[in-house]
Image 1 (cartoon, rainbow, N blue to C red):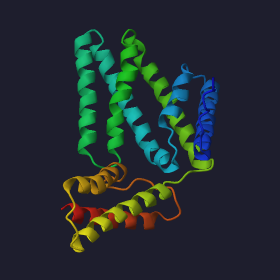
Image 2 (image 1 turned 90 degrees about the horizontal axis):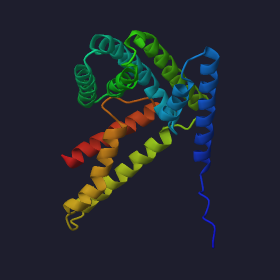
Image 3 (image 1 turned 135 degrees about the horizontal axis):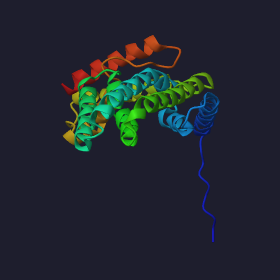
Length: 246
């Protein structure tokens, strides 16, 4: 009977694991030194917000902290007023989460991430505190401190210790998009067989989906030595795709 093969991890994956573990232990230590009631919130937050690329962690840190404050404010507003009416409280929480999600879908800038996450802290903090609405302010303050501590620790470690920039991934995606677009246009102008709709979707639409997800209407933070060059090439690729699929 042969033994199962051990999974093989790349050096980047091992480095990401070590950095996440270091940030989690740092958050756990600082929360214990500060005397926070639920230290595991800081530990859990580190693993939730950690990303292999440092630029993504840094660019979203401010939005995550802002959404935590907004969600905790909504909790302090809803729980004392509606704690005796569970149906109305559930309805208010549902409406709050839905409105936050709607605004995040309408806003195509990086700040949409803050609106998307603003609804979840309200539910995560509010529903467990329904039985003790008098202590909702202290509970909300503790959760904000624990979550923000985890976000700051993850941002610090991933930004300082052997950072993995976003530029390489961005440049690779842009080069692939331009190659696919050039190949499609070459087939058209060379009087070759016209591309079928399936081939167009296979080449162009995945690139458009990746661009829409990674690059919103306003650029996020890029970790790399040539941010201006990356942004200029990004504009070129967007114009090329826009002209191609028009």
